[in-house]
Image 1 (cartoon, rainbow, N blue to C red):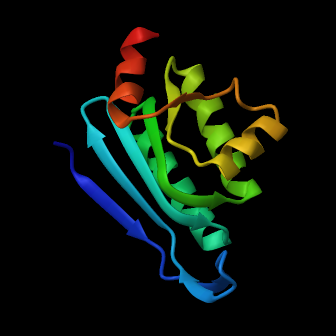
Image 2: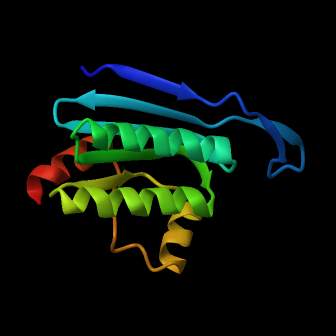
Length: 140
């Protein structure tokens, strides 16, 4: 099992949940490395510059370490702002130049709709499970 590195934002903000109540939101970026593969798990909503910085720092460190096969697990992510989408797109372009790829796991319907609207659905392979995303590297 890889070393688990956790970058948790200290930034907390209030937002309205679907029931109209204010709730605290905290995003979290966790990175797990397994040999020449990295799994980046996002939870919460990536909506502030601090959240974006955590995502960018994690991806930059993975690439700096020479890992070009990246799985981004979005199962617990509620929302990504436009900058977070841009960070993922830049990471995909960067690792593809090195023969790698970024695979997405279980983005929710809101996130998928943005990918479709931006016509990015063909830029990323999407998978239902982490195991499928990992196996997808060997199938390519």
